[in-house]
Image (cartoon, rainbow, N blue to C red; front, side, top):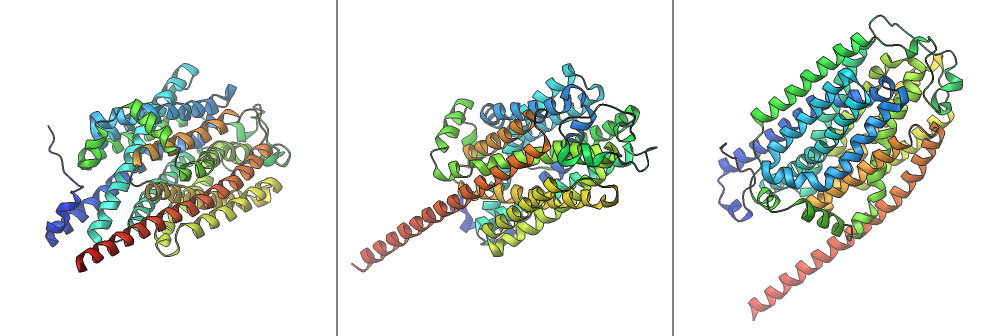
Length: 477
C-alpha cells in the first residue's frame, strides 16, 4: 500500500507547526499544483487539438460534431454517478490516473474514425471527464484554502491564483497541440484561400460544404496518423507524470468522499440548487459550455477551415491558446487587487464586441490577420470565464464543494451538448445570436448572485461580531 502524504493538516494542529514544517507544507502544496497542471497540459495538448479538428476531420454525416456531442452528454451522466464512486474507492490521485487513460483511448480511436469506434470512445471519455475535473477542482480548491491558512492570505486570493496558474499551464496545451497539428498537416499544402469564402464562409456558413477539389477541403490521411501518434505519446506522458510525482490528497476531504455514493451526490446536487447563488449562475455556467463549443467546433470549421483550410486551424488557434494562457495567469493575479466583478465586465464587453465582428465581417484574402485577432479575443474571453467561474464556485461554495462542482460540470456540459446538437442544423448567424442572448442573461444572473453572496457574507460578519460582543460582555460580568 502506497504511503499517503497528508497535505491537509487539521486546523487545530496548525498552531503547533514549526516554521520549517509550515514552509515544507507550503512547498509541497505548490509542487503538487504544478504537477497536476503539467499533467493536464500534456493530456489536453492532444484532446484540445483533436477537439478543434473534429468538425473538419470527420465532417461526413456530422460524425465529428456528434462525437463531441456524445462526449458532453456522457459527461452530464458522469457528473452525477462517477466522481463519488471513483474518488471514494481510488482517491483523487488515482481517479486522475484512470480518467486520463480514457482520454488516451479516445485519441487511439481516431486512428480509425468510424461511428462504431469514435462514438463508444466518446462515451468513455465523457464518463472519465467528470471525475477528472472534479478531482482537479477539489484538489486545487482544498490545497489553496490550506495554503491561505499557512501563508495568512485570503482564501479568495489564493484559490483564484491557483486556478490562474493551472489555466496558464493548461491552456498552453492549445499552443503546443495546435502548433503540432499545423506543422504536421501543412506539409505539401502551402497557402490556400477559398475563392468564394465571402459568400459561403464565416457568418454565411450554414453546413459543411461538399468536397470540390478546392485545396481547403484536402488533407493527407497519413499525416493525420502521424499527428495522432504524437498525441498518444503526450497522453501517456501525462499519465506517467501524475503516477510518479503527484502526492495523494488525504485528510478530511477524502474521508468524507469515501462515505458518499452516486445517489447521495445526486441528492446533494439537486439540493444545492436551492441555493439562490447556484440558480443565478446557471446561465453563466451554460454559457461557458456554449462559447467553448462555438470556438472549438463552429469557429474552426466555418471561419478557418472553410476559408483557409484545415492545416491553418492549428496556427489560428495558437493565438487563442496563447492569449488564453497568458490572461489565465494575469487575471488570476489581477483579481487580488480588483475583485471578480471588473474582470467579468471586461470579458463580457470584449465577447460582445467579438460576436458583433463575426456577425458583420466576411472572410477576405487581404484580411487574413482578422482570423488571428478574432481567435485572440476569444482566448481572452475564455480566460475570463474559465478562471473566474471556477474560482467563483470555489469561493461561493467552499464548504460544499462536491455538489457545487458537480453542478458546474453538469450545466457547463449541458451547454456543450446543446451547442453540438444543433451544430449541424443551424447557420452560424443563428448561433452567434444565441450567444448574444445567453451572455446577456448570464450577466444579469451573475450580478444578482454577487449581490446575494455579499448579503450572506455581511450577515456572517454581523453574527460573528455579535458573538464577540456577547463574550466580552460575559467576561466583564
